[in-house]
Length: 455
View 1 (spheres, rainbow, N blue to C red):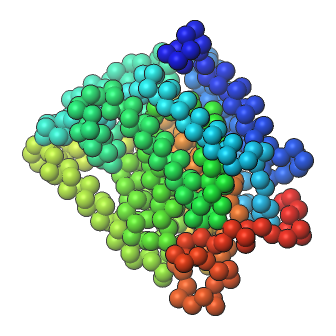
View 2: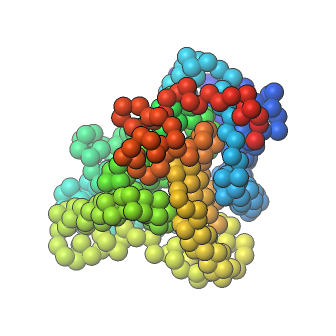
View 3: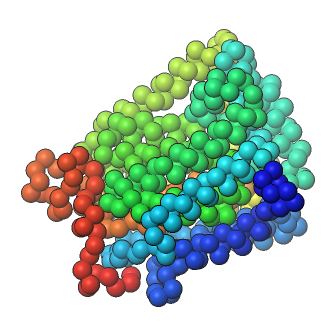
């Protein structure tokens, strides 16, 4: 903001208070204080104080991690119990469609200004550097090791997320490097902006195609841009890219091949997306599971082929494969735990937490049956939130991993009429769909007075 308004600076606490007032004014239901929508807003806004403690008060960082774990636990319980809220009243926002669209565009420009004026994240710049090395068929192991050492040395001054470079983000960065002529900082900034723009567009498409109301898509996109969690980590592409790919997979869920390809790219971008595969396979089951699985495997083969073509030799290829996987997340030794919640306690306690997580994934995979889009959204969001509890490197701060999914759960109407694949006969479909079979008519979402009671 210094470049636009001289002497005017919006720091993180100020952004939190300003966005808090805007979000309450636009989304809070004043005539239904004790409603599910207000509870969701309180949970999403409650994540920001924990992030502020971690980022701006190093002496109180431990309190911030505990705060994030408590709020994340409540949010996880809310997601698991989402199916109990059978009534989903259509709650309009406190702003008409034109005002909501203007606010969304304004918030996007504010985030764009923040991206272009702030220093890019170290991991994003390193991804661009590695992409440039791959374009020139050079082994980037040395530069990656140097960046990791520098990151560890700077942890004493300011806590940073664990530095990771993935095949998908590297492949994406290769395209950006080609567009920008190899300017690393500019490429990193454009990667961040394009990732945010992708999330915004996907949320609008989900509202239009699956929720039957583009205003719901605008509301989700606007809230995503206004939330303090987005502004705090606005430059972290390695957090944004997998979330964007997952949301677009939800957008294209009617096409298992497209959804599988996008989720395969998300798995190559960040490890946590791999835990979503069982839920998605169970969601499609006999109505597209084979095509979905083949698409995921095909994307994995393409990523491996891209490393083969860009590696100087077989040794370089092996280093690229091993270096792209963060093996430390699967270790439970004390020396493998970075700055975060688990530095306060014995890391061995992560073992029962991880075991509980695997049981949770299994339960959410097999229950319930049959499944619809409601179950896919809530269970995917719950699994990503649950990974925060056992992740060793600053677990709890990776809000952007699950924020778009949670927003879809918050704003969704009843989606029981959306199975994995459209039926062959319209008689078996409880509600009529449009000519493309993608979304129900908007008039169906306006329920009668008996269903307008709050959940």
